[in-house]
Length: 141
Image: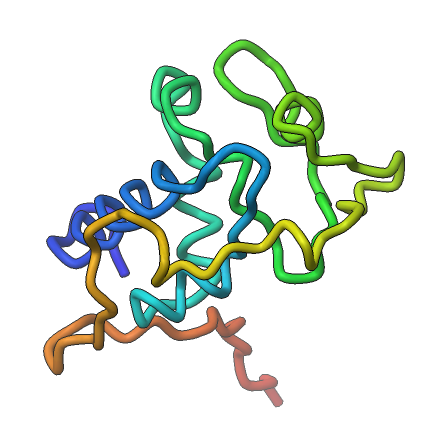
């Protein structure tokens, strides 16, 4: 899906609305947001990873995490504060290895949040997202 497509614009808008509604001390997963929007979790992660610095300061993006509850990269906001530090300010404990402690007790159901985004199904004319395949040239004899 191209970043300039109307589908991507809608998905981005909806992801940001959902993430904005996550209360302090609670978490949602990329997978749960993706299921609500009928997209891939990696699309949710991409939108949040590519936020402009000003948007990262205005949105609680740090409350959206991988399903396993392990922060794999040192994401930062526009001021350079890490996701683990932002979660700690919210009262969420993160182990030195990136594991979120008390993960199960922190999750909130995406559908129960006051974001106003209905559960969605991909339109029939939506672009198909496929894994990139390496092009292999046939051997020359």
